[in-house]
Each structure stands twice: as C-alpha cells, then as structure tokens.
Image (cartoon, rainbow, N blue to C red; front, side, top):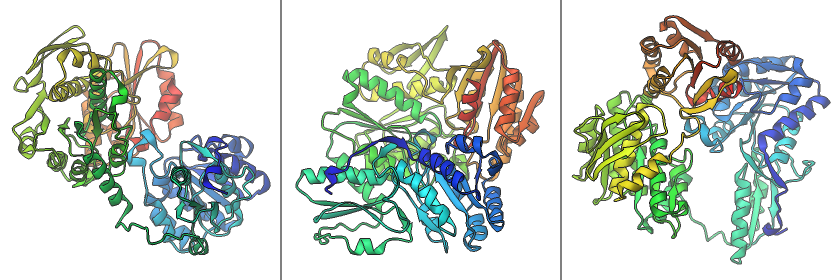
Amino acid sequence: MNVKDIVMLNEKETRAGFGEGIHELAKQNNEVVVLTADLAGSFKLGPFIKEFPDRFIEVGIAEANMIGIAAGLTIGGKIPYTTTFANFSTGRVYDQIRQSVAYSDKNVKICASHAGLTLGEDGATHQILEDIGLMKMLPGMTVVVPCDFNQTKAATKAIADYHGPVYLRFGRPKWPNFTKEDGSDFVIGKAQKLSEGKDISIFACGHLVWKAIEAGKLLEAEGISVEVINLHTIKPLDVAAIVASKQEALKNKILVKTGREALGKIAQYWKAQSKIPLVAITGSNGKTTTKEMVASVVSIHLKSKKKLLMSQGNYNNDIGLPLSLLNLEKTQKCAVVEMGMNHKGEISYLSKIARPDVAVITNIAEAHIEFFGSKKGIAKAKSEIFEGLKKSGIAIINRDDEFYTLMKNAAQTEKIISFGLDKKADVYLYKTSKDISHIRTPKGMIDINLKLQGDHNLKNALAAIATSIALKIPLKTIKKGIEAIKPVPGRLEVKKGSNGAILIDDTYNANPESMRAAIDVLANQAGKKILVIGDMGELGKKAMQYHASLGTYINKKKISDVAGIGPLTKYTIGKCKGNAKWFGNKKELIRYVKAKIGKDSSVLVKGSRFMKMEEVVEELT
C-alpha cells in the first residue's frame, strides 16, 4: 500500500477507545478492576462503572495511593487498570511505580491519557514528554503508545493477557481514526507497516503516526517514495522491523543532538526569512489576555485576521513557540506570540528564536516561584525577553511593577514605552467615569469601554495600548480592537449558574496575585458572594505560607462563603473567618455550593490547572 491510499475513517478521542475497550474487556474477564484518581469522566468510564460498580475504585486526587492499592490487588489475582493523566501517572508517582510495581513485577496496567502536547488549554503543568523514557527504563515494564481510537481499544484489551506491568499512553483530543476496527492489525511488540516506500522511512508512535502519514503524502506528491511504520510498542521495541526497513537513502540523513534543539533552529531560520514585525509577550499574569487584545487591534488595523499570525492556546514554550513560528506565511503582515517559562534561560532561548520587534512584560508575580527562589529571580528571568529584541526594537514595561527599574535596565534600549496606573507611565489611566476608562498616551487621550472585569484586566489593556502604539497603529483603531475583546475561556468568564446565580469561571490557572485579583472581582459583585477555590501550584517551600496569607486576604473582603479543596487550600480555609469550609473531594464540595447558591449569588471558581476546577464549573452551570 502507498501512503496516499491510507484513509481516515472518522475522528474519535483515543481516550474514548480506552473507555469502550475496558468496558468490553470487563464483560470477558472478571478479574479486571479499574482505579481512578478523580478522572472517571476523562477516561469515559461511565458504562463500566454503571455495569461493574463493585469493580471500580475512586481514590480521589491521590495517585500514589492508587498505585499502591493496584499493586496490592494483583496479589489476589486481580488485573488492576489505573487511570489518570500522563503527567500524574508517571512523574508524580514514579517512586511508587518503581518500587511497588516494576521491581516487584506486579501485573498493574498504568493507563495514561492527556499525554504529550495534546492538552490544549490544560497547559504546561499537565504536559509531559519524558513519561515514555521514565517508563521505558524500568525493568519489566512494557510501554504501548497506540495511534488512534481503534488501536487504543485493541491495546486496552490486549494488555490484560500480557502478564507484567504495562504503561498504556494515549491522548485527549479527537484524532483521525484509520486502523482496523476489529484491532486485528495490532500485536504487542510488533511494529505495523502502514505503507511501502523505497526513499524514506518514517517511524512514529501515538498521535504522530497520522502526522507521519500526512508528511508522507506531501513527500509522495513530490515524487518521493515513503515508508511509514507505526512503532506502537516502544518496549519491547521491534528492532527487526527497523533493521528490515527498505530505506535506500540512509546517506540522506540529518543528525541532531535533540529534536527540540532541531525544532528551535528550524523555526529560527524560518522566522529570519520574514520581515514582518513580531510582538513577544511574557509576564507572570495576563500574557494571554494581552496577546488577545493586541491581536484584536492588529486584525482590525490589517482588516483581516488572516494577515496576522497569533500563537494559539498555550503554545508558548520551547516546543509551542517554534511550532507557532513555523506557521508564518508570506501573506501575513504581523505576528503576536506568547512566551512562558518555568526555568531560567527559557525566555532567553525563545526570544533569540523569535527576534521580536516589540517585547512586552505584563507584570511580575509569584507564578513558578519554586523554580526561581524569589520574585526578583522571576523578574530577571522574564527580562530575558529583551536578549532577543532587535536593536531597533521597543520594550513595553509595567511602570507600576516593583521591578520596573530592573526590567528597564535589562532592556538596554532607550526605546521604552511604560504603562500602568502610575501617572509617571507613558500610557496611564487618567480617570474613570461610569464604564469608561480615560487613558492618556503619548499620542493623545483614548476612551475605552472595557468588557473585561477587574483592575488587572485594565492593566492588560494598558499594556496592549502601549504595544499597539509601538506598532504605529492609530488610537481610533486601538479603541475598536480593545473594546471588541470578550473574556477568554476560563479567565473571569461570566456564565449562567445553577438556580439563576452568576458564575465567574476563572479556572484557567492560579497563583497568589491572580487569585487576589479574582477575589477583588468577586468582592465587587452585588448580592451574596461565594468563593470556591483549589490549590495553587509551583509555589515551592513557601506554598503553605502563600495559601495561609490568601485566607487573611479573603477576610478583608466581604465574601459570604468560602469552599475549598486540595491539601494546601486547607491552610487558606484555616485562616478564613466566618463561613469557610474545606472538602476532601469535589462531589461533597459541589453538593455544598449548590445548596448555597440562588438568584442573588455570585460564585467565583478558581484554582491551578492540576486541580481541574473546571469540573466544578460544569456541575454548577
């Protein structure tokens, strides 16, 4: 078969293949049990739970306990399937897997969804690429990475008969489904040749198999014969299939140190071919909202969204940014990208790849502080964005920030436009009247009716205005672009809640500063105010202190009720006065909040990504 003959049957979630597979398997094998860490919905376990409730164990957000329980169940002859996200399946519980499963040769099936970069809005805290390596190096561990719905379903069934520990890895989104429906083309340990080819061989696993097929079709259109091989089993690896590959052009290969480094260099080269202005935005909070605002202004200025390249979702790291830049086309006239980080040197690397014409720092807060030791360390790391700024480039800096001078000095340019509430800023809030913000800029006054709530979003707007001025866009157009912005999903997004309540969904992520900003928004609402919060992540040794101080902050606001979940949020609830209650699981929390809310209620839901507080929002809307 030629690669052009491979046809997509439909699009289905690979995790749904697991859900169907485990349900069918349970009907055939009474020893199969399923454990989950608060993720039954994500793994599509509804039908299994309904038919086999006595073979289902919900452990809550306690992945290490789940692995220990599963290992114990194997002693009684059970075949336990554990389910949680890939990042938590491996990184969070590696020691338990190593000791209790791998070295003990326990027949545990570790099933991991949301693997790799397939998370979308779940973000970097949920992404993991090294999980395959972590599992592959453990003794006795089999590693299987199916490519589509059908193959995931087949693999789920097959590993039950494959004695010993298995790591089964799949993704979250809908993906092309193209393998045989009955799963007969799947055999553990045997690679699947999808097409014949003599010039190039492409080996892939998981979701990348379909990308390999698409690449093969493009190459075949250029007269290059392509062999595509699906290496769904990473361990044991089908070495024979690799050796037997009929690749006649081995000399036409490019060796790279790492795939990430190669991706970065290719993106850097591709960006260098373009002369269009590029805006790069970083900061502890407000990056995405500011990016959306700038993109709105630029799109109106260019009279077309197609003429703008904007990085999507959380494509802001050393993989996401290069992928965004590789989408640059000749028809585009401007680019707006976001740069994130969780370690020193990352922003420098990204900035040198993108070479921005305008570099923006929205603010400095405690986000990811465990990796930097202090806010000053974060400020220095964020200031790395100026290392790739072109000599003729313009720096946009928050004048209100305590590290303004540090950032200004790091910019090493006289071309700086500052923004903030401080009247020393170049772009600042002159006054407000009703819903209108009167803003003074170097180009004159601009009156904005901002549709987003909170002072922090006003500051994001000031940053976007300063950036747009740097791009030489008229104030009239800037006004239209800023006023056209609606809330980004999961960021102070107002929804209709249960019993007629107003629900504010701010579940995208959380750190101390963004949490305080969101609480301020809730405090300004009318009627009964209910705060629902989860843990804030990546706060290092001071995590307990940050959570406790949040309780003190809440006491200063007129909040009617506070409901919390997560081990660290216990410290917040412990400091709260009045109606504040902590819960060990979401079901009890949701039941409590539902009983509290009515037509006169405003409910704010917020927490870090790993807390999955959007699940609470779903139940309250």
